[in-house]
Image 1 (cartoon, helix red, strand yellow):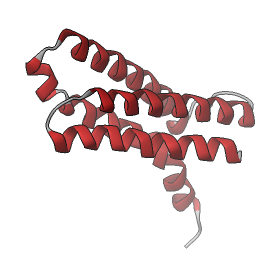
Image 2 (cartoon, helix red, strand yellow):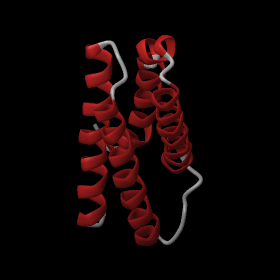
Image 3 (cartoon, helix red, strand yellow):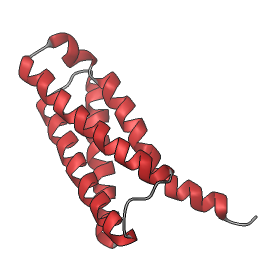
Image 4 (cartoon, helix red, strand yellow):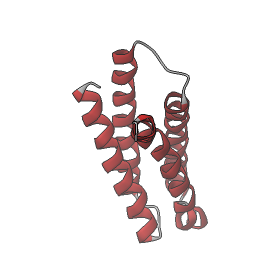
Length: 124
């Protein structure tokens, strides 16, 4: 894989994890979490684009399908978080972390799937 893709995807993991778990542990959606959501999405999109170029197109396997689904879900997540903060909806601000953790868990599938596929394919 391309070093740029590896760096971008790893940065996405770090940024998105800080945003999601900072929100979850703090119990409240704050503007700085939003910055980490958008930065994680940007890094993931860049890394995914580089990977798609590197392999010559999008793959229709678990990694490819869940990767696209995760980026779309991250986009919905970031847009919704922006809307929740803009509306000052206290109920959603204090419960938004439930959706954040769900999106983060979904995102981990394409992040770790190449490793699991490689492990499963190794002879014993």
